[in-house]
Length: 209
Image (cartoon, rainbow, N blue to C red; front, side, top):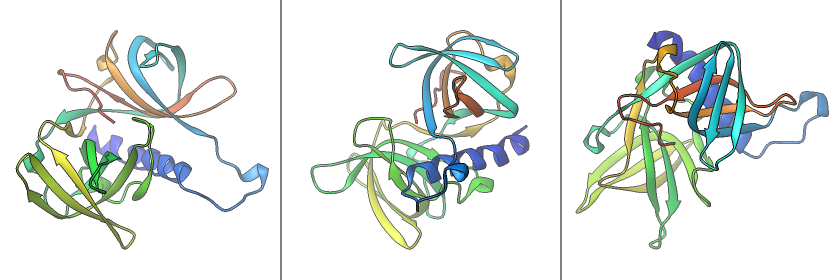
């Protein structure tokens, strides 16, 4: 299952990254669909239709594209973050001029390089997402500070103890149950959100991104 999940998630995360980064002007016919993020809990699921109550309280109908892929997240630990790992870290600027992590996703090795870069994110106001390789991870009094590198740049991010740390795990359609929490990177379409990938929470672990 995981081998089937990874290629699609790589494409999805790369698409999200591309949409968030500034781009050169393009002709109207070359424009890609606007990317949106849906965070919420499942109201119902049937075939290619997923109804989700978002964290904002709105109920949206998501259409699942042909060949859509499903994955879940599994708990990891801050001590699992090691040099050479490829991670996705949502963070906020901190008072000392650095960044403080809101959550960390440790990518499986097969997904190294997915959506590499640092760009605006909508988890919280002023948050950013950095997909990068860990250069070092230094243990501190209340967590760790990691230095990550991407496209020849470096960024230091503090990860306090208690910050959600997860990795990608397999899932099946049976996990799309009432109340399950999902994170869906989708395309904005005339008929409503169109999704190629869905991340679902299970076993008490929810997608924190």
